Image (cartoon, rainbow, N blue to C red; front, side, top):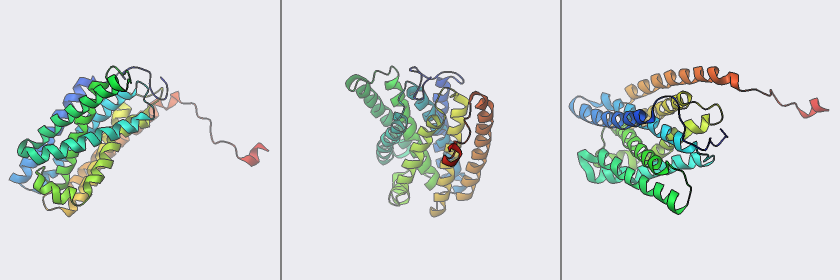
Length: 270
């Protein structure tokens, strides 16, 4: 495998179809559970949407891993930004017109846009990646669920009348764009190479998703409908667990890397 990929879909580990189910069901359950529990009991349960965001982020990271392994190289960051940009448009549309069905409409809209982008990339631009259409559909869908889930974590709801003043009007939507895109694109970008493994890459996805939840929890201090402390604590726990696992995988795989040591200084060469 080259630094950019092996020229085929990344394989090994957990079946990707299971990760798709985990991402979609986990995100939607987290979003809707947070919404209904916040309305019925109180804002303390807004953190559940953050768990949904982590599910969609891990799914997005897995989809990026599969398509980027064809050798996109520097296109890895670009595809993450494209995904979250597509998801942003679809999410705002879905939440604006969908009411209680907003997250689902956002997801379906994003998938349609992602599919169109994948078709254009392969058939017009001529990238020639066999799974481009499917992967772009997945990445866009994961991006939209991530945006809705993080918005719900910050505000306690996905209703547009609350999202507009608390997330969009405040500019926090830009923060969601950045942390969402980085969480989806960074895992494979940080682990690509000849010794890339699914478990280490996805553990990075969990870790980056947890950081996004922590940031959403910090933002929740400014809104009345969301709970900050539970969100930050849950995010911190998941981050510590995921990072510890990531470090274990690093130590496991490090024997395959031959270090050159510190390069000699100019004085030492003389």
